[in-house]
Image (cartoon, rainbow, N blue to C red):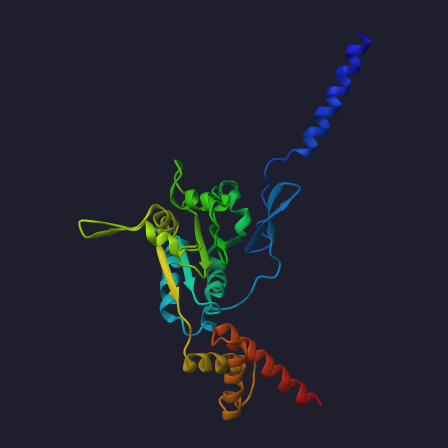
Length: 291
């Protein structure tokens, strides 16, 4: 009898240790702590971590992307008002404001109940758990996937595909997915895939590999394409940021020449390069003024 009691005691102790190692139930975050959250993992347990200092960029700060801004702002306004709206894929040239546009939308509509959940590519497999936490809330949530691209066979690819439009469960009406990528189809494309293309009665039919890659991006209802800025657009953005930073004579020939040299050195006439130049120039002028 004593041996049986010892075995039971040891088994109970072992079960307690195993239970401590298993992930517990998902806990809701402090929703009043912030308007933006990140999905994090600790000890195998996922949780929403409040972002204590969200980026405070405004829609008005984004120059040279007026048409894209108008379309995504209208879609987000529909969503916030409880009207039908689409998941959004923003693709194109780097540094043109894709990610900043989504952050600006949060600042524009946070007071009306919009919230942002940032999810890294490797954590997209947890999308069902994330949506389960959000679906009962009164707020409207944008799940933000930045700089998204996949390699073949990644589990996050399948999870995102199902979350967009492929589950037996209806999508949550208070959750949308906004993703940015430099690739329109979110996956690398290879020359060999073109060999799979066939023609039937003069009709071109892409191969299965191409169809599979296109199928993910097609599940986003709204596509926004971003293009490299020309020289005049780049200089206009640089002047805007210089004015915002309080730099006098932002339109002088010297500033113009320095801005073009900066872009040449960076190999990019992008909004990001213009913003970085403006900060550098404003900082240098500030140092001279204090000498």
